[in-house]
Image (tube, rainbow, N blue to C red):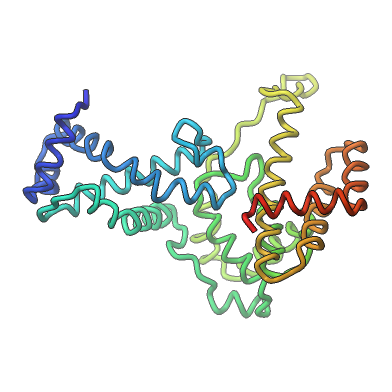
Length: 320
């Protein structure tokens, strides 16, 4: 079991300039203890310097509260980052290091960025997604479609899927609004644009297979229930109530709305117009079938006093 003496031993090895050499020469059991000790020193730094700011940018205030609040995919990303820093330390800590935390703090960015690129490269995804000139020409230099192409190349190397879907269409709809300055587009529009970009990419089949098709094949697919033999498909098992499902959908839409509003406000668009358009577009197209909620939304946006209250709340959340 890891104890305080392991951490003290790692600090001593670091001060003596022997940490990397000791890790390289250590048998598996000893190396595991060294890794555990470095992990104990590194994880608070990773959470404070990388995870917490990232989760705030992603509008995940719950995840920014602490490890026990991290969502499963956010927790996986946190562990990947800590492992990257630990591995970096065990390979690169070759000289005397008086302040191990201080040294690790300077290595957080290069360690995690290198590991991220390495993981992408292992599955064929581009390590630094860039728009090839030939693809830009095929898309006629359209600013949004060229940006979407980079988003697709980036997403191909992400190990998780977008829930039960292949592409994060809702997030890209918000991104489209940021890039074009237009209202948030519906999912059908984004889907058509994705297919248009993919068609252009397939004009070079070998490149497409290597950098899009192959990485996509490594995504963790969601598990679907199997229908019974010679029987109608059974209803899906609901692990949470419908109210909770709808609440989660609304929370996701709220994150997208805040991102789109913040982007347009940064360009100097009037707050009242931006808030009304984004909320009406996102929440009015949520597809819940709840006519009472739709009526409430329409009435709230038409009422000057209530709209002013909504705008004030949004600006307070965004710190504007």
